[in-house]
Every structure is written in C-alpha cells, then in structure tokens.
Image 1 (cartoon, rainbow, N blue to C red):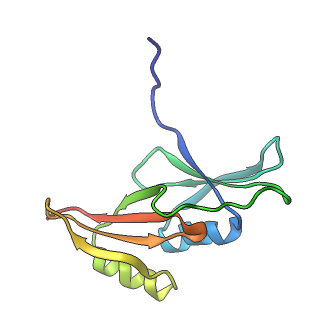
Image 2: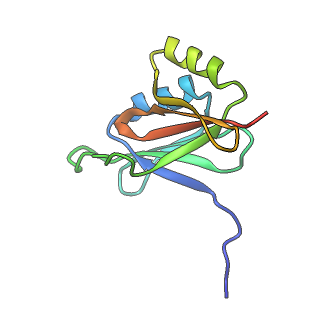
Length: 129
C-alpha cells in the first residue's frame, strides 16, 4: 500500500489576507516563505513555522467568492511556547489578547488560546517543566 512521506502544509482560507499575514507574523513570529497567485486566481501566502518543516498556507479567493465563515471550535493550530505568561503579555501589547486560558492541564503543561482573524483558534502550549 502506498504511504505519504510527510506533511507539507495546512491551508486556511481567509477573507482578509493582509490581516491574517500580519497576525501570524507579528503575533506568532512566523515568516513569509513565499507568495503567489494560484491558477484559479487565489492569493496564496506560505508561512514558515519555527522548528518545523511544515508550513501554513493562507488563501484568499478572488473577489466574488463566498466569504469564509469559521464555525466555533472547527479547527485550530497548536504552537509550543517557552514562557506562556511572557508570550501572552507581548501578544496583548500588540493587540492580540488571549481568548481563553491560561489553563494548567493534568500533565502539568499550561495551555491558552488566541483568536486569529476569521475566527480560527491558535492554541499555545507551554510544556510541563
């Protein structure tokens, strides 16, 4: 049976590409690795994630496309942070407050959530020390 060899990227469709790119780069520190227009006319931006080969693809469809409506708790990305308290303070100072948490888990990790544009959730995890 054929098998895949690795995960390359995860795609999130957005209504406001500039606002989403700003959030992921300014708040989370991701880096734009490339951007282009797809054959269907969608604007694509790929973001490199620290410590990982996988990327996040943000996609804004051409004008006239149905707008994105993200259901609550539909999907989220999870990122590890060294110091959740410090991260949360810096993110809030940039206009990105936590939407939930911090909460200590049974394993001793601390988790929190922050909302990205369009309503996608981003989970932040500080591993147990």
